[in-house]
Image 1 (cartoon, one colour):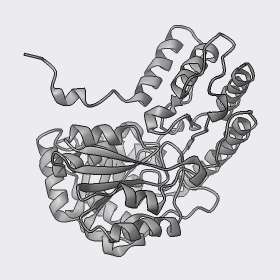
Image 2 (cartoon, helix red, strand yellow):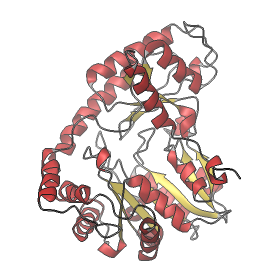
Image 3 (cartoon, one colour):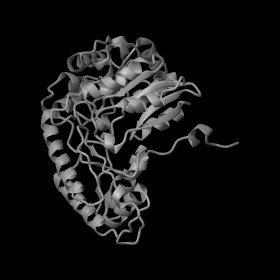
Image 4 (tube, rainbow, N blue to C red):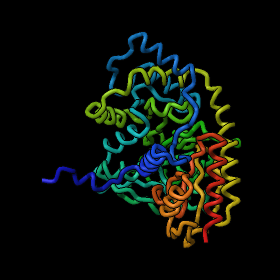
Length: 400
């Protein structure tokens, strides 16, 4: 009897975690490595949030909590949705999990049946297709091209939907591209969804507050209120509040769906960390002033990276509206050979050669479903970014 399940054969390890791990191993071995693979801010969790966690520990708030979140956090989440998105939810419509990833996974596990499909725009966050596969569903990739600034067109969405479609996963601003949909662009997609009442919407809004140059964030249930009853609006505290390791994600949606997700969570992890939940209450209810300050820093870093990569012949690097990633195309470099003799046949060989020859770790585009590209996270210091981009320029200049 085979030890490992057949389900596991359907999925692959997270490529982003693999890149980060390899970079860490090379660094530990003494190599001069600049890692641009991680999707987390490089600054610390704000002090008021840490203080709230310490206060929770000192007050003995270290026991089990309700499976999908303490009432205080659910109330704070309801207030956030009303304040930021104009959406009315009750605590019974809210689920809190161990990061946004668990929320998405719970929703898929609670709803997918064999043969049912999930439409995923590409480039996509690496975990979407694999979570669908683990839940027994079929991922259907709908390409969003460089020519459309990596945003899905209504025509491409329409073409991807079939009678078997259960969910449409939407992510703006996007990981890996940083592309953000305007209200008009999103309305064009929700108009398509209105014609297909059997399709549910999973909106991953994790990068909501990381929006630049006056970009106005919007979410599907806000743009098209008629979708409210079949939309799960997902968010979390990881990115905007630099709380990636605290592991708190949340979502709001119809009570029946939230109840099903609670059942899944009750038989897997049970409640998220009690102390992290109290920290998240402070994150949502406390001052939001540092978000704008951090965004100024991200804009400066984004512009530095886009300018330096755009100066490379053979690379096209769009300027993203949000998040902290750029997703340059290397179409003009395919077929060339590196100074060390590696033929650049695709974006994976490019990323591997770049790491081995220059010590710069990026994630190859095939991991996100659209090639030939690579993802750079600019959530690191200006000095590291400048040095990394200089090394990328030198590497590309050496291609023949």
